[in-house]
Length: 104
Image (cartoon, rainbow, N blue to C red; front, top):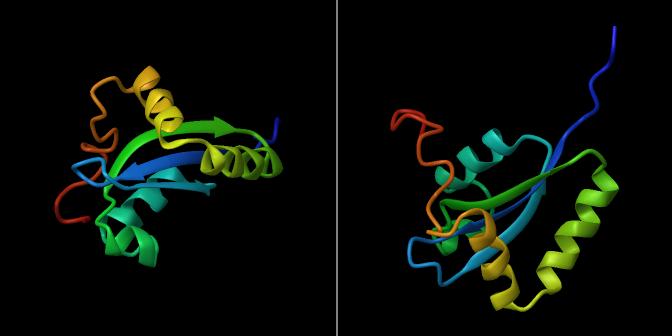
C-alpha cells in the first residue's frame, strides 16, 4: 500500500475590495480558510476582514512551501496581483461555495 505524501498549500487571502493581501502556508487549506472566514485565522486577517481566498498552490514539501511563501511575501504587490489573475482573472473568492453559512 502506498503512503500518500503530505500536501502543503501556499495561499493568498484578501478583503472584498482587494486592498489588503495575506500570504500564508498550511497543510489543510479548507480548515485554514474556514478559520479565516470565521475571523479566527490570525489577528491580521481578522483585523482587515480577509475572508476571500484568491489564490492557492499545492506543494509536496513543507520546506518548499515555506520558501515559496517567503518569496511571494517579498514580491511587489503588482506581481502578486498578476499571479492571482493568471489563475483567477476576476479575483473572485475561490472558496465561496466550500462552506455553509452555518459553518461560518
